[in-house]
Amino acid sequence: MPKQAAALAGVAMMCLAGAANAAWEPTQPVEIVVPAGAGGATDQMARMLQSVIQKHNLMKQPTAVLLKGGASGGEGLMDMKASPGNANKFIIAQSSIYTLPFSTNLPFNWKDMTPVAIIAMDEFVLWVNSEAPYKTAKDFMTAAKAAGEQGFRMGGTGSKREDHIISAAVEKVGGTKFAYIPYKSGGEAATQLVGKHTEANVNNPSENVAVWRAGQVRALCIFDKEKSTYTTKVTADQSWADIPTCRSEGIDFDYTMLRGIFLPSGVTPDQVAYYQDLFKKITDTPEFKAYAESQALKAVFISGDDMTKFLTEDEALHKKLMGDAGFLAK
Image (cartoon, rainbow, N blue to C red; front, side, top):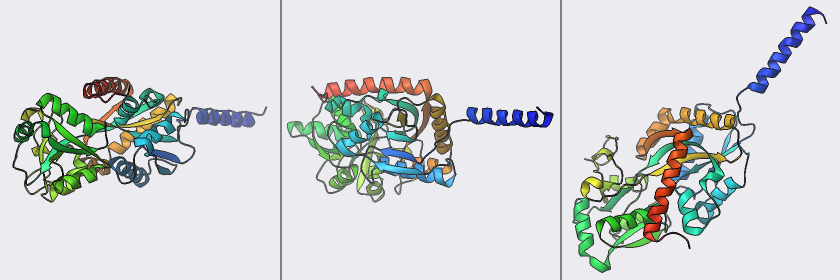
């Protein structure tokens, strides 16, 4: 073989080897599975992620948001379970990965998917109508106890879900009783509180921020071990950081909800690494940081073994909380 031809053949072989060893990336449009309805917090996060990916050209392939909120999100979870090896889709998951199987016997476990990263923790706040006489969580709990068997009406999203779990836990640690009223959404729960059809709710910040800003509801405490770090004023005189923790107000309970990214089972380490890198880039953008502050999301980035450890412990916590509340399916 002539020297020039041999050299060209060598170059060609190196190119082929380089292509074979190139990092994986999606080969077709990527589906963002949303296990919830249109307009909710998960749908909003999906649209934000889609926008950030497009604006910063973080992915060569386009993305498509797929709403699969049937069966309280079970549709989306089962879709992921039925897609082994498909790395061209990911789901934005929350604690329903535990609560649905526990409360309904849905044949699903978070281990049916591949963990990528937890990109935020969602907070919960105890809210009352701004015209209510109680100014603190301690005042509220005293009044709730005084209501006796009649109980205060506690609004929430759905039954045996996060809002219901928190309400049941507050009953237990506070020695009181609530008449829990499940609504279709956090927005509806907020409207019912403004209309004084309930005494309280434990909505996410994003679900009550508009009526809080308008002076229609009062934030009593946040269910986290520490206060929020967001100091920008939301109302005339309060920021998220001004809300005390519920523990500091005598309610010995805290709860946050993961916002995690998962791939289907059976994907390769290279595919997981691609999405971990993608979401690290996304969470570093000013758009994501602004979104997190606007929603009062607790910014975190947990992946790898740390994520697996978190999920294992969080699953056990939810099983205990739901067992204590009598929410486990028979």
